[in-house]
Length: 171
Image 1: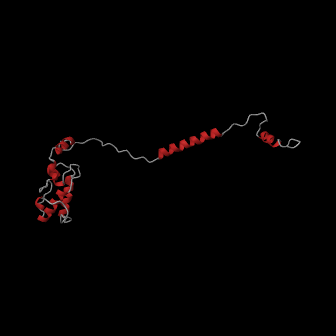
Image 2 (image 1 turned 120 degrees about the horizontal axis):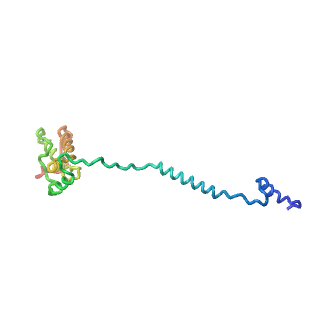
Image 3 (image 1 turned 60 degrees about the vertical axis):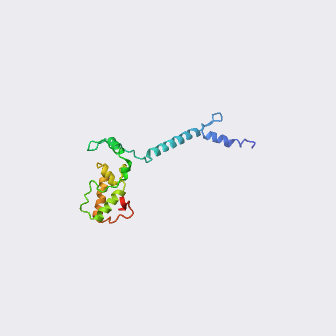
């Protein structure tokens, strides 16, 4: 320190420039305010990100339940199908309701019958296509599938039934 007190002068000069006197209180600490502002900005950013996040669409409920045209309710149909002996689900069917096989050659008829007795109906009944048509002729799933199979055989796209289930007696 110098004899004239020059060491203290720079500190006093700063205080004087800030508009304070040596007796005035220190300036307020702004760190808590800045921390609160930063926290508010983070919360705002998370909220915006949450609002913009892609959401999985919620499946809409069907408008109304419609009973089948034949008057049988879904429950009645299920009970009727449950009452059928479960061995009938795999029963071999030679005649398929909804498919007129009169125009088929014997080979085409054999291929068609083999496929309708090998393919399962996808309506959930557990029957083969042929058995579903036989025991549940109102099924809305089996008839279109049988018709597509019929068309494939008639057009010559299916000419042999290699690898599908054989009928009674190995036919």
